[in-house]
Image (cartoon, rainbow, N blue to C red):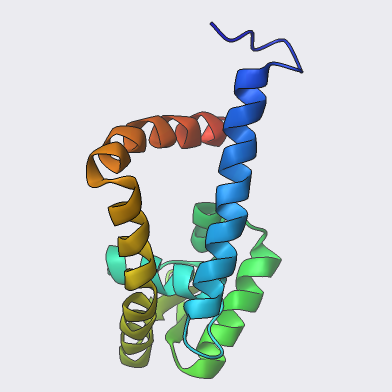
Length: 150
């Protein structure tokens, strides 16, 4: 059993070293494959808006992605400039705005998905779908633990 209080616990160090390196490598590889001008943060927001299919406030998006409101405002500004999202005033709260994916945003998201899908499929094929299915619950549990207030 792992000793969570030991700062040199080799199991914990190995787990998080692998997770951090996989994250870095995946981000770099996917970013290179995205259509010209699209950043991973742009794709992530477009994907979230398309999947939820509802308007979100910038604060809600910032919370979902665990970034500052300023960082999300910057991302939304770039997406709006590209025509990928519509930003409108919140009719119920004049201090807030609502963000929705546009038709062009849906098209850009689909193009991005088509460009990264072969990379993702190759990884799943190489690792094996059964192994991927078996590790997903563990990764979800780790994510949920990090999402708990400290």
